[in-house]
Image (cartoon, rainbow, N blue to C red; front, side):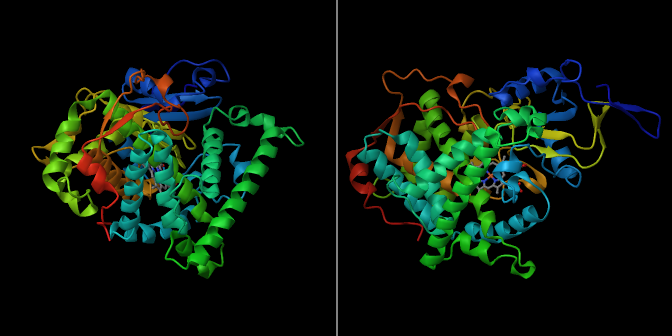
Length: 482
Ligand code: HEM
């Protein structure tokens, strides 16, 4: 456990500090099955930003400040951009179509294709459909008087992605493809949370021969997902539209490699995260409502009552932008990021001490600590959009850890931020959101799912239309992005 590296200068670098573990297994039994991010954050706070854990021989390095995460994952990205594999991946993704979990050729091709797609998103190509989805959400919440709003966030996030990726909008939430994709996602997120699958914790169990439950489940999961994505791909082809699936299907044809399937991870990575973010936005309205009046005053001044916000208003609505940023900071969906793995030994100087990071270390940029670092954010538990504003303008130099770092940074950022912006703008324009009479929802971890992505657990909320005029105007709103 006392790994040290002697430098040519004669000085000795040691592993970053961390809790004492047991012989052989190290800290394995100290890391909780759920809410790992909270445990990691506590360690980062206790040990001063950088922590190491011994997980039965493999080293976990936790980075709990923005500077550390940028130094390791951005400045040293040549050594820190691999992904650790979990034993369960072998069964759920034998062909490595989930490039988010692997490195090498699939990741390279995936990112190249995504670069082209996101250039289109930045140029506004998807704004019309994102506008339409947000408008549908407002209408559905109004029609249902707020009932089912929680799952509406799932519908709108999934429908926006399925429209862009496959030309398949899901306006009712009852579409079988939407239900299948959400079921798939729930199973996947559960399986890839390091502590929830038995062979992730005890890989030697995988030496047992025969039809073990994880093998049976993995094969069945893959079969179902392939069938679903084949169906979605066929739909995209038949639509003749300029979909993301079409770009993936045509991509990298020189090598003859099948790139069609890479769309799988690209679309599912988009849904759970954006859903969690929208649900946390509503939670912020319930638990920390003091800012809402200021946001609505700006929207009212720019947009008025006679039409709904559109992407064309974005530059005039910095407060909405600040709300999106604060939601991403306050309750981010992927609280401990997706880990990177190092491919070479390294030495890092931090607070006057040299620390050794051995090759093969599994490195977490713990966003849950980074975004609540008291040295960067005053009262980090409060929801205060103003922290991103300077007077009426957005502060310059915005940075967030919510989308990860370096070569693995989330490629979907332009799409994600547009979806969040238009939904937040329209919901604030249309509704006053309150706690329902019997809702005692709080902020503790018990109110969150605590897995790989970390949405709040379902809770009721009251969506009161702000005026009869808005209610009347909502479904007559023109598609302002077109
Ligand atoms: C609020 C929304 C989102 C959040 C918070 C989020 C967060 C993240 C994070 C933390 C990572 C890991 C980055 C790293 O390893 O350093 C990631 C990777 C990824 N995200 Fe997102 N994401 C969001 C939306 C999206 C969307 C909309 C898409 C696609 C349209 C997407 C596609 C992906 C893919 C494919 C990866 C894997 C990249 C790789 O390994 O090279 N995400 N995301």
